[in-house]
Amino acid sequence: MYSVSNEVPEHPCVSPVSNQVFERRLIEKYIVENGTDPMNGQPLSEEQLIDIKVSHPIRPKAPSATSIPAILKSLQDEWDAVMLHSFTLRQQLQTTRQELSHALYQHDAACRVIARLTKEVTAAREALATLKPQAGLVVAQAISAQPSVTVSDWLEGYSIRGKTVPEELVRSEDLGKYRQVATHAVSCLFRGADKNVVVFDKKEEQIVATLKGHTKKVTSVIFHPSQSVVFSASPDSTIRVWSVTGGNCVQVIRAHEAGVTGLSLHATGDYLLSSSEDQYWAFSDIQTGRVLTKVTDEAAGCALTCAQFHPDGLIFGTGTADSQIKIWDLKERTNVANFPGHTGPVTSIAFSENGYYLATGAQDSSVKLWDLRKLKNFKTITLDNNYEVKSLVFDQSGTYLAVGGTDIRVYICKQWSEVLNFTEHTGVVTGVAFGEHAQFLTSTGMDRSLKFYSL
Image (cartoon, rainbow, N blue to C red; front, side, top):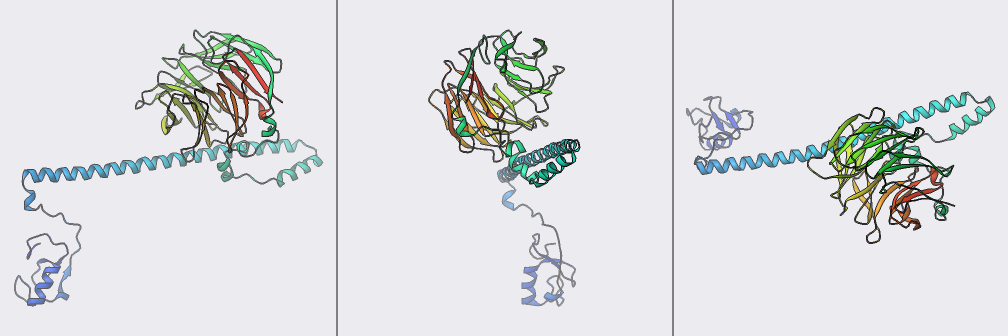
């Protein structure tokens, strides 16, 4: 194969005269000078040469590469090239996984809204069928006059509730006029030093249950939206499920080996997310008290300080003692995104109802807003020096964000401007929440008081 040059040809061709393979550029020069086949001297022209199609040839090592040092250097160079190529492939794989994760999330979200809209349409038709003919005609015309809601509309605003502001929602100018309208002294409070859970009825303005059972202070309390059930967490490493009507503990969930730092109820109302100082988050069945899964980020090795479900229940966020916010995929039980930026332990996180924004607070006296679509921090609210952020919550429409800590502050979303500030508590505010359509605001504090704010 190397009749003239004694090397593997780059562009091989065969002579029909001698049936030998030559390097085309060399045989062409020889033919120009001699006009014959170099092997047998028979007449040969360039037109007679026949090209050979071959795969890229592997050239033999040059004589300089036959020494042991040269071979070692050659192997090292090849190893370096393989490692660089492998690193590039890993980066591309990670990018592809993230893109796939976002695509699957959007698909699941679209399926969720389709199911919700289908249910609403079915309910509307059933209600329409029970109306009188004349009333039905008016309602049908009103429904048909409304613009249709598409999946693309929902992906822009996550849901009807998150996209359109309810007419009943208190306007920002009225919210700014809120004043303290009631205060109640209670023996124990959310994140207080007591071991009890107190349930307060706003309409009756009285305590309806005092739930006792924890052996250490209560650090987290949430109320079931449709059942008379309360969940509480404590540094005693337990999560308790309470019946308000019975005034007793119906389940003790032992999901952790250290203090429980955060609780969040799944959108279905059947499962509970918890975070702990043992570095694990857990997913438990509230009916049976059984721990369904328990996961930790082995690479981080840091205590979890809070946890919160995304409104769709498919992902959730946890805060850590080393200033990180981690987003997890519940189905895959994997950490899909991290939001660094705080300089102190994360104390509270909250998702907006539209599902696109995340608010986080930490011991660095700041509140950060994150865009989950772009995975970046788009706004930082810097508070007073030594301000303690203990609680963050969006109202149900996603229009307002309340911050509880050294005092109470409410911001209007998108502009992120402060619309009111309450300083009535004499101790740190440990919990803050909106009433329906922001018709009132309530807070608890270390001064052992429960306060309501309204017009």
